[in-house]
Length: 111
Image 1 (cartoon, rainbow, N blue to C red):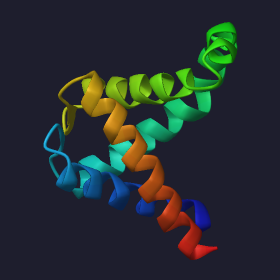
Image 2 (image 1 turned 60 degrees about the horizontal axis):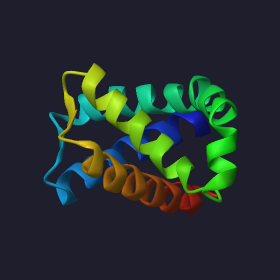
Image 3 (image 1 turned 90 degrees about the vertical axis):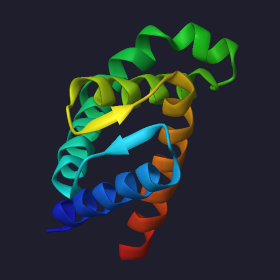
């Protein structure tokens, strides 16, 4: 039950990001739900592999390269899905940061 609630809150966070940023667009709440699911799957399946492969550059940049990885995964989700669009890398950086902050805040509200 809590997994479903977190998924819904992440969808709402994605809608808020799309509302705030002109470079991020979500067609509908259904598209936001699918995009939140895809972003979650990418973060769960692909991100650990990318973190391992880019560990030297992550250490060299004192962890700042993880922001780039988050942005690339956010951008990838935007390019794969039809109802979710990210207009460029810098929009992906800002969007990924905002999405993480908003979803973290919303998730912390449920305990």
